[in-house]
Image (cartoon, rainbow, N blue to C red):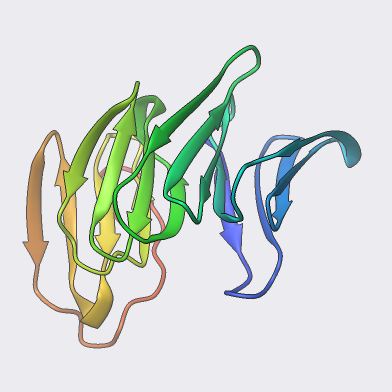
Length: 167
């Protein structure tokens, strides 16, 4: 599975898998392979977040559209809400984090994950998602079941999957 990174609200953003990287600035995606520029793609709105799953790249724009770019295909999927972040999810899915909730998107299907103010998330290879929301709330989601967890003692702002359903 690929990875997504962000250096902050005004910093550069990057996602990668192996020797493939994608960055963005404003409405332009920039692709690199082995540190060499490979391609540029312009999107219709400024980009908020980008993710890479090892096979495809996805970008979430400020207009609430998820753009999925594969080797031979490009798909756009509208997302309801105010976009904040994006991660590569389990089994070819994407997890779009919005101020109102998170959305799991796979093959054009949208599944809402009701964690208000979704800020960060991680996807475990077993299919479990951890979603962190505003105010210290967080929950796990797996196969359509959302389990709210007790509030953390300190505000959570980031998370990572460790494997075996652990975060």
